[in-house]
Image (cartoon, rainbow, N blue to C red; front, side, top):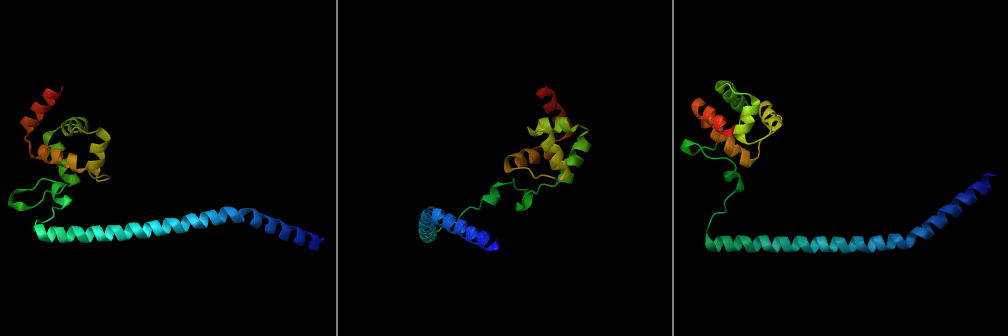
Length: 149
């Protein structure tokens, strides 16, 4: 009986390969086409970057880095760096709740809590607001909260 089962298994495998062969050939052709397209795109990117570099050399204008625009600069030219402890300390210093801090920052309560605990880092838009709020005094903050209500 094992001879029959071996012959049957080999016949099923042969028929399955025969059925799948045309599909696999189509996939192989599309795979090679995709690979050649990717190679062409890589060559194009390389040529465009070299053209950009030559154009920048001709213009002699330094390229601005996007990192510089993330946070406002401090006096002395140093960048302001967000620290979760500073946000929590300022909220405690002002004596306001997380909900009020969220109103001031125009953000969600959960976001403020995650920023304070360091579980998340604020985006560039919120970094600017956070920097402004951290520089405010208690009277100004209370006035802003009174206006918001």
